[in-house]
Image 1 (cartoon, one colour):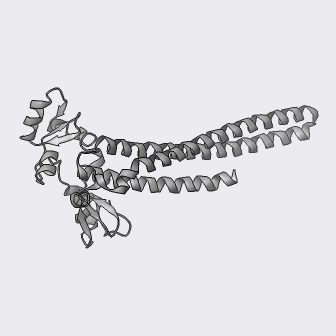
Image 2 (cartoon, helix red, strand yellow; image 1 turned 180 degrees about the vertical axis):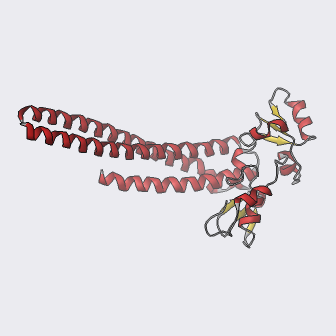
Image 3 (cartoon, helix red, strand yellow; image 1 turned 135 degrees about the horizontal axis):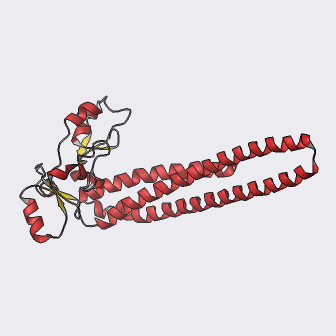
Length: 265
């Protein structure tokens, strides 16, 4: 998860050294990095040769992918715990200098000079009892409510713009019938300029709606994952918590920009 202030890196070089998928059970239960040979679509977890036997014995109706379908694994295995830059790897460290979640490839190529690296499993201890973590659903709910309100306001403004455009066109057409050829040409130029302006404004408003909708859905995805993992893996909960906080900061910034635009429109 490199930033512009992190150590120089080469993503092409880094990709050559990426670890393959590790067995999630061995990693989080015994802190051992054992190569995974299978991935369960229903559990969204990877398993080694031994762990998959226990899994299949208890959950024999689940869909399990082997190495022949490894290209499908990334979208299945602990998606929220995967590194954004290196999705084949799980986030294991946090660089406190840059405030970034890191996998082992990030650490090797982008943070090897950073002195403040901590393991996620250590930072995640007791996260389910943290006040900020417990308050996260309420904060997300409030933020998404604000986003929904902004979306509704933008849609109302879109409708207002369209209605204003229709009204202006009617006035132009009414005026045209009473004017001579000179004013008729003026009408044509006015209509062209007006449509162009309305199209630009509508496009801008739609982009704002799309941005709000996207970040709204992303925040809810993180919250759903946190709720479904309420008493599950603390590292996964911590990662989702951090990513959700980052996305909420981005959303607040977006809402601030929307508020400034609202004063202009």
